[in-house]
Length: 243
Ligand code: URA
Image (cartoon, rainbow, N blue to C red; front, side, top):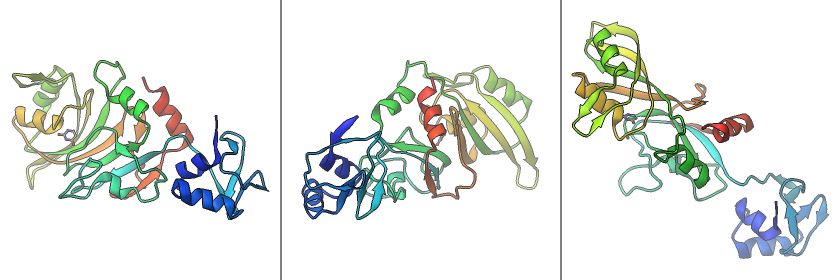
């Protein structure tokens, strides 16, 4: 793809349109090592090497980040009361990142943020037949036994308007000191408060929730809560081939 040099620099947050024109006129910008002084010069984003003050800028059409969402932060672009997941991404070049789907304020774990609206829509839109599998770690109140496994597998009736698609429970450990069960769950849809509502309907309560994966993408366990990293090239390929 070929775009104007000033647009390229704006997209990469080198400055506002007028600021980047100024940078270009001051001979601070090179394309393939050659000083360029005209903002309208065309850049081939796949081939040309653009640098400002000798620092090479890599162009990417969109940005994709994986965040290990901490508890206490809301899955929104802006919020008047609470810190948002977008505010945690501090090295973004674009200003238009948004979270792909939501985790509750008290839920931790894998969250994808991007400015690629088309891919986000493809992944989330109902009826798009994108296989939506979410894998989460849960701490639930009480002893979660085989009865729950069967109920969740058979499609739990949550309320009169919602019967969940079959979900898979893996019981990890029952802790009799505080009467809690550690388990993992795989669900196939991402309805509002889905897991909390499912456990409540089944007679328990979710005490802790952490999403470990979304479709083919897994949380990088080296990311501490609140930390993020850009997706790798192969993770972006997985995202795009996820259908
Ligand atoms: N289910 C919930 O109840 N909450 C989440 O944040 C994610 C899934």
